[in-house]
Length: 311
Ligand code: SF4
Ligand code: SF4
Image 1 (cartoon, rainbow, N blue to C red):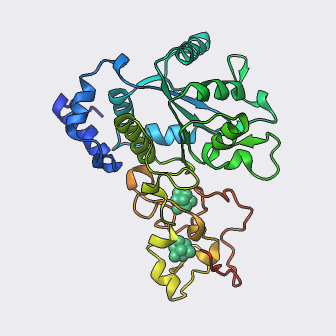
Image 2: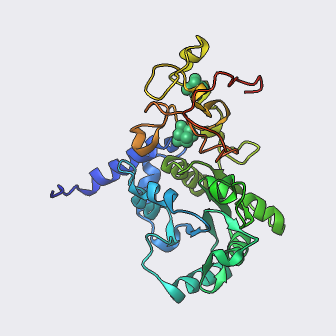
Image 3: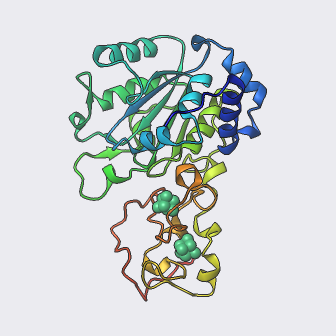
């Protein structure tokens, strides 16, 4: 299928629509976009993105979304010095870029996707140096750090019970190494592109991260649980519970983690807000929560499952 080419004005409007969709229009105007476009790459803030122990799902989700022209946004507002999935540089070209930038006074925003395997550093190596060394080096020189996705933000699958890698979140690792840097955590398996766009643009425009909660998550996205805003909340209140997938009713007794999962899925679903778990009739598995992944039995109706008071 051939695509109709769009002119510059339409392209800019499309980018600005994506900025609005991410919620960033509250602090970033169309005029700011025009100003960003007129800058040369060396006038824009640098971004370095690395993968720790991860499945690359956050990057895939981030880069594949259709209504947010993510690469356009990144390249209009920042200089993407390195991203493992979109940069053309390989081998020593990459390590040279990273070392040169770290040694310069230019500054950069450091993004980490994935866990940091401190007990098994060689589980994740880049240019013959374990990721632990790269993260220590690059976080030390960063203006701000972004933990992208649940693995980097809260632990996720690399840190689940029984794994041997001793995986740490970026926050835990920085504390462990005594590195003090502004840090934001964006949990979600995968991370939502809108969360990243909002956070990155906030840092670029204002020079600081958005307002955060005690777990360093932006309040803008992580103030409410899925349960608080659930489309099935009336069923929950009326104690109408589904006994199996496909039945009408609240999904709590099928293992729904909505009551303990703070994120914005009920108002901003995945894939350009196409859908999200509960709207599709599946219990929330808490992918953006501290407890993910839980050793729970999903889908088996549990008559005794009760809501604790502190939800
Ligand atoms: S338990 Fe889950 S399905 Fe039921 S109201 Fe809460 S979030 Fe919605
Ligand atoms: S509904 Fe729950 S499991 Fe599904 S994407 Fe949102 S936080 Fe993750």
